[in-house]
Image 1 (cartoon, helix red, strand yellow):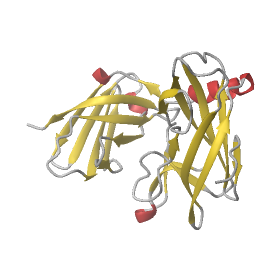
Image 2: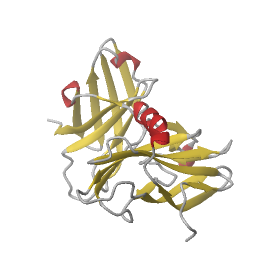
Image 3: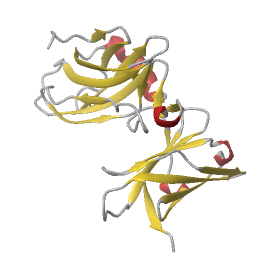
Length: 244
């Protein structure tokens, strides 16, 4: 593998790793920026029927205990088997890394990245990036986190499992503005695009098909990401009830 740097350039996209040195005692924040060339697209954590979900592996970094990667609101594009969830312009994948107590200050962050990008053809991009914490990166990292979906309470939603469909209802002031819903669940569970949507003042309802499920598995909770026309609204670990 080539010598790691903070930037990796290919024909389809440029990948850049940035790490903010602020609050670097217990944790560090950073972002992986994927700057796509015109016409190219990349994918969300659940890419849909086609595409490759991004992988960012920090295990080669010394002195860390865990890493949490976040993603902004995606969009849907393509048709039929080429239908996918992802991004068609530059996108940031923010992350937060918990640091070990004995970690030396200024130790670089190493990220092994694997993403899929598509135009007329689809190609994988694999790169090892390395970046030291820097005050210069602070503004870009803060901006990336500010674009993440707003977190909402589980009390605002109900999720009912009815055979091979999830019935999702959200009650809120902006429920009438919700235009789409992305659902993710435990390993082995995959959900499709809502087959029906109904909105009114204060309430939005979605019917989401279950595309694949582990055999004899019980679904206890899902993560919900609503498209509100802005940065999105996220509800994590929403409990699932079975229809009566």
